[in-house]
Image (tube, rainbow, N blue to C red):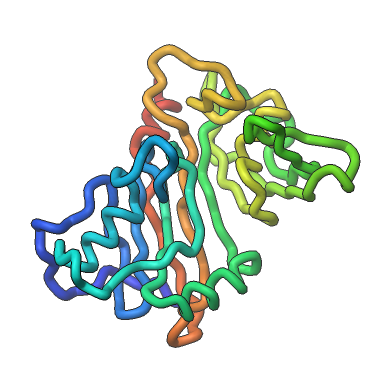
Length: 235
């Protein structure tokens, strides 16, 4: 396994994408650390304040006529920070997406309270309602299997820091699973409860291990744990 570092070639500061830290770039992929609060792609209300828009502008260096572009491989929720991978060709995008479920992804989260079991796997079937909110169902015919592995790294009086391994990639599965366990992710306004003084959702995509679409070598990308997570536990 290889951990790739930032490309050493200089970049124009003028076109540096806001809300994104470039972790690695070559002629085939672009890997960034996305800030919390930034959409991966546009929605009905937001068109250009997205990671996709900013990175397309970055690779084109502001030249609207440039044929360079990036391709979306996967997404992170607006309020989730961390590692986000883009491809630089349709071929490499398809390669990564076809193998995506087999790649290992590690997340970190601060949850409210503490879990009885300090390490384990949460498993349930998840379905989506009319307002696009996920919820657990008992009938496997009505939902998709979601499995979330976790390990408690640190606990304080009110919060716990978890290392999370995704065994499946269902929408919002981390947030739903810990909310259902009675310990929602801190700052989760959808599946938890608003808490005074909380600045952001405490969920971070920390590392991802993939096959490089060109070299076919196993590579790992890592986004440093936000300082805010430890600040929560030090309160």
